[in-house]
Length: 152
Ligand SMILES: [Zn+2]
Ligand SMILES: [Zn+2]
Image (cartoon, rainbow, N blue to C red; front, side):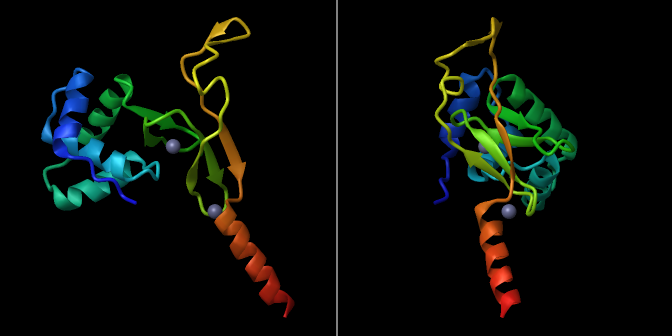
C-alpha cells in the first residue's frame, strides 16, 4: 500500500526540523516517503523533473544534503559506487541483491538498532548500518524455475 502523506504533515515535519518548507523540499520529502526503494539523487531528479521542470539536479543535491544533516534521511553506501537515500522511518538494516541490484529493508531486532546499547567497546555509537549482500528471494525463485525448465 502506498501511503500518500498530506502536504500539511510534510510541512510540519520540515518545520519541526528547523527547515523552511519550500516547494522543492516538500516534493523531495514526499518522493522519499512514497518510494522506499532507496533511490539515488539522479533517480529522484529524473522523476521529479518530469512533473516539475524547474527542479534542478543541484537543488536535489542541496536538499538531500540538508535533509541528511537534519537527520531526516540516511545515506546508504552498500553498493560501494553510489549513495542511495532512505527516509528515516525506523532504524533498519539493508540487504543488497547482487543479482537484480535491489536494496531491501531488513528489520532485525538488535540492541544496537533499538538504541538500547549506545556504546560499543567503549566507543559511543551514533549510527548503526547493517549491510547484507546476496541473492534476494525473488531471484532465488527465478533461479529455481530456470533450473527446473533446464532439466526438462
Ligand atoms: Zn534479486
Ligand atoms: Zn531502508
